[in-house]
Image (cartoon, rainbow, N blue to C red):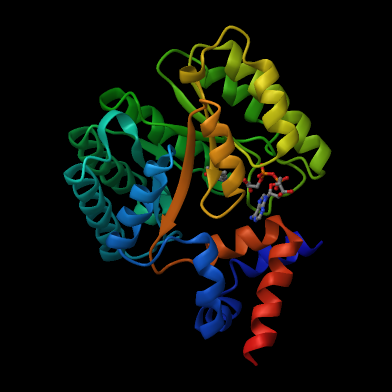
Length: 306
Ligand code: FDA
């Protein structure tokens, strides 16, 4: 119930103005967001890399309905890729980028979003690294997978994200479990109707396990994005003959940082998803929705300030 209320608020403009305008929000945001500028993103990437972790950077922003704003997002991605390359962080994909297609205009014009995503993929390839397309709510899934297919013709290493809460996802995993395919599997962070998505945590977890089995049995590169200790343990029991470099774990910046380092210390590849930028509202609300303790952290911070 709390999760659904917070996720509904994540798309409400009045609540957004209220929360984003509260000075205390910035302190809470700092736990989950590396900072507002490119320098902050590069600094965070360097620190994580020093600790033996790999990185995917997300320039925050979504649901963009303005063409200039979409173009500005592309420009920022190209800039951060150049900066990362200049300091030697992109080689071999150690630091890549994650892109939300609605940030580059998917809701305005799909063809434009494809062009914009291709520009970012080109900049990533020039820098020696890759792009992963984040997955947003279910109304975008077909469009996102269509754009992914188009991008992969020129940029075959472009990564996809699939969400185990969607009923369709086991089938999508089968379609994408081929050689050269990089697939990030997550539970899913949006408010979705029963018609398309499992509603209980246990159904979502069981689906996650089925999807992992498909991905591990395939020839692609599974990227297991979860902080869930049980799913991480199940993943390790399912790897079969796979070597440590044939899959990776992924976690969010600021969530279970000790576990990130523990797994990396065991020789696993662990990629940290690092968001940066000023448009943190939707991202923060999804993080609050995932864990009631985060909401009390936020409310306590508000109370302390007032
Ligand atoms: P679950 O929510 O069950 O959490 C398991 C445990 O992890 C919790 O008990 C807690 O200890 C810890 N934890 C989880 N979330 C926390 C939080 N916010 N704060 C503090 N502790 C927390 N979703 C999507 O729809 N599209 C996408 O493209 C992506 N991309 C993505 C990339 C990466 C690298 C990650 C890790 C996640 C995503 N997600 C996503 C988000 C994902 O769908 C999901 O909402 C979160 O990862 C939370 O799910 P868990 O699997 O961690 O399990």
